[in-house]
Image (cartoon, rainbow over all chains, first blue to last red; front, side, top):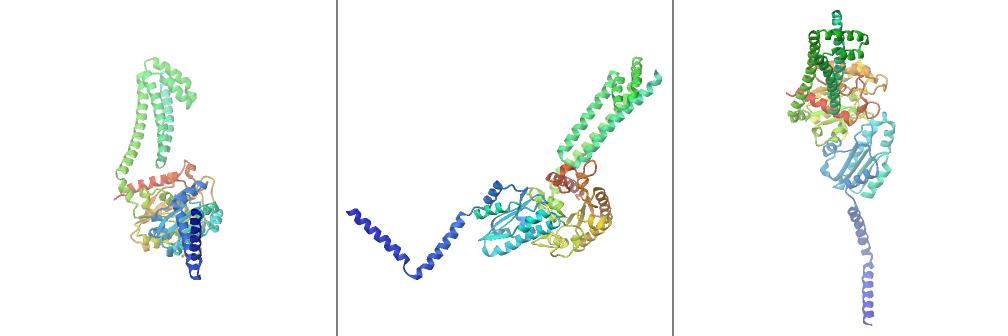
Length: 173
Length: 343
């Protein structure tokens, strides 16, 4: 009998707490905000390092002589300040006859996402102009590509296997 | 029988000339490939050394055993078989105590052959010395490219990507202004939607402006692939000169080094884009460079096969673009050039 009494007290207390939590209009909005932040935090926690994502891409897709470009490359040619990036991979094909490009950048400050996107659009325009009258098949691949953003991430995929690569990136960030 | 002795001399001489000529061809081929990969040189050198040994054995046998006829015959059979019977007659001569004179003749040929070997050794020694000197000055040679920019089309773009893949070498310090479809012709266009000026600092710019921004001291330029079919030989040279004029106008102190336009694969001609025209174009570029006090770096010949076409082993796309092995040759040629131009 003593046990039953304790159980009844616990159930009552739990219900009181739950009812208290639900009570009043003013408490609904904060609860939703907490929920949204929690999702974002959860996403960040689950996001993989971009190098790992790139490794996963290499495991899944056969890339065409990929070359990882260095800080000097992205700053000299595309005016991207490496210090603005938390992490990144910028990969182009070593073969001049292939437009294949994979860029994944995690921007430190979300305010810089737009300028980084614009810088990557220059890559698309450059490849497009190079291939248009030269290698029509490559031009088509470039033409289908676009710069994408998600939170603090900016990425660009120019590849025959773009769908598969984008899938891996989307799952990773 | 003595009267035939002169013929023996002729036969032996001819035989040795034939053999030495064969050797010379091998050596020249090996020499031509000097700018290529180490493996090529080693393979050629080994072949040449075998030929040297073979000739030496023949000559030794002629000289020491006094059976020059037998070996002479063997050699002649490879050249002029009609001398066979007279070779046999010469055997008798040898038996008649004529070997001293005969030995004298073969010794002379042997000396000539040894002279050939010495020349070969000397050439190899010079090359080795050059390599050693380059290794001793390696840092200076690498530093030669520190303030340089390489300008070009998709062929140069391939070199840029090759360089980017080798970030732990001096190549990482090179600058590039390269774009697919770039030409001396469209390099003069204004920046616009149709232009393909190499991007620098986030936007297309005319190369003389980018060179100014980079503060480059040396410009290595290779164009023409996308010009010959538009403006032909003369016109392309004029445009080339005009473009360099623009670069010099904005950057008066910059050094200009023209790089020869590389060849295409045999049988892949597209209009005026064919190897004899390219060869002629390169000759004109060389003259233009010499006439203006500019440098000229000949990469094309180092990548050419014995017919003067782009060697298949260096081609990546069955046409004109090149693979990393070709760019290894570029590096070798450029470092040699730098070594020759160190102040």
